[in-house]
Each structure stands twice: as structure tokens, then as C-alpha cells.
Image (tube, rainbow, N blue to C red; front, side, top):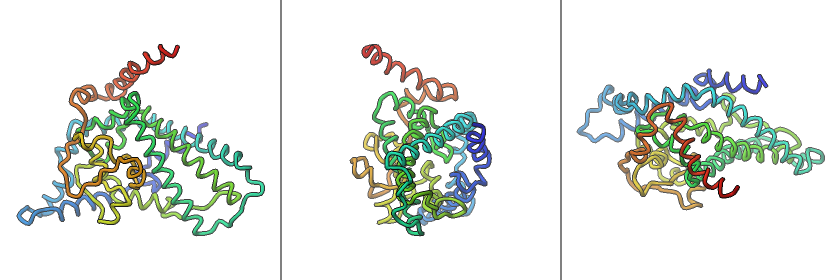
Length: 322
């Protein structure tokens, strides 16, 4: 039991120097350089393009020291303990789903129908990223469409400014919903490969990280939660979800509500009609209704307000069922 918890705890404490973690310093540096480049190349000719002004635009104090951002930092630090437990539980659940999948397919006996080679390793790595994207899309879709789950997901959307730490502004119940879909998706994918190849398949990795996740995290991942409009080049943006698409997802504007759920690819959003792909840059104001925002401006409120609201939605239904 201790080993199950100590691993995620160790990774959380050393996130800056652990290549497998999304807050690894190289991923942060890549996003920071992209932010600076975005500010440099989007400036009108008449604007001050000095290094100091560029840095000020890329990392504005009024955003990174905004009361909402300061709340993000406090909440993320306190929530880290619960996050470790959720990660540990996700690992256990993924192993269980993997074992059930292998058993349902007939176990490892007589499997190994093909040789695990480099292309297979690449396919396995890509399937892992695709499973991550699929799990996130459906969990995210439910978090917006199921009223009780939306009360918990409001915690994330109540951020009044976006910084890379806003990704951690998630209620534990919200995290558990996402973790459950991850366990199911990864467990099924792992089980299928274990059955087909008679054992584990080695992923192609960079610094010990699945090469496709490495590319995802180094590709301006942390600008998904930022004030900057970063859109991938034409062609690439049609397949991959640009950071600007997630900025739109956080918009207050009604035409942006319930759009751009998937984190990696545009496929699922296109399939479900939730893709909002702008042709030109749009001005975005992030957040939710002011009445809801006022109820989510302290760590205590971020934890307790969604519970009270979700119970008020669920209890009448439970009473009727009883």
C-alpha cells in the first residue's frame, strides 16, 4: 500500500525534474519560449518590441498576481495531497481493468499473434495518447452536461484569469471522474496489447516518457491555460487542438459554451459537433457567471460550495427513487 502511494507522492514533489510529469522544467521552458515568440510576432510595427516589454506581455504581473491566480496557487498546494491519492487509485484501477481485459480475451495463453517491434511500440505509444484524449473528452463532456457534475467542474471554470497552474484548479470529485475514465481507457488498451503480443510492449520514449506524450507536453501544453492566443499553423490546427481552442473553452461568451472538450486531437469534438475553430483571433473574457464566481473565491468555497449544490440537485431525485 505504501509503495502505491509513495510513487505518486515522490513524482509530485519532484515534478520539475521528472520528465514524465507535465510540469517538468523542459515543458515549462518550451511553453515560456512559445509565449515570448507569440508576443514578439503578434505585435504591430508601432508597438514597443523591447525585451522588457515582450516579457511583460508574455508574463503580465496583473495576471500572475491576480487574486484568482493567487487562489490557484494556494488551492493547488493544499489539493496536492488528495491528488496523490487519486493518482494512486487510478494506477490500481488501471491494473485491474487491464487484468479483466486480458482475462476476457482469453488470457496470455495462445496469444502473441504478432512480434512486438518498433512500429508496434510506436503504435502502442500513440494508442496511449489516443486513449488519454478519448477519456478526457468523454469525462469533460459529462462534466459539462450532467448538472451535478457541472457544479464540481465550475471550480475549474471559475478562474478569472488563466495561468499554467489553473490546470490544477480541479475539485477532487472532478478529478475522480476523469481518473475513472482514464483507468477504463488505459486498462482496455493495455489489456488488448498484452493479449495480442503475449506480454508488455516497450514504448518508444524520450527521457523515459512516451514519445507522443513528450511531444504533446512540449508543444505549448502550458499555454492552454494562459492569456495568450496561440493557434497552430494551418493544416496542423485541423488535427491537433491548439492552445487557443482551450482558451475559447474557458470563454464567457455564449457561442463558446460547451465547445472544444478534447485536449489533444480535434476528432471527437468534430464528431460530436462541439468543435469551435475560429478563422481569426477573437477577444476572450474567461470565467463563468458573476453570481457563481462570488461563491468560489476562497479555498473553503472551492471545496464545499460544489458539494452543497450537487446535493441539492441529487437529494430530490434520490428521494423520489426511494
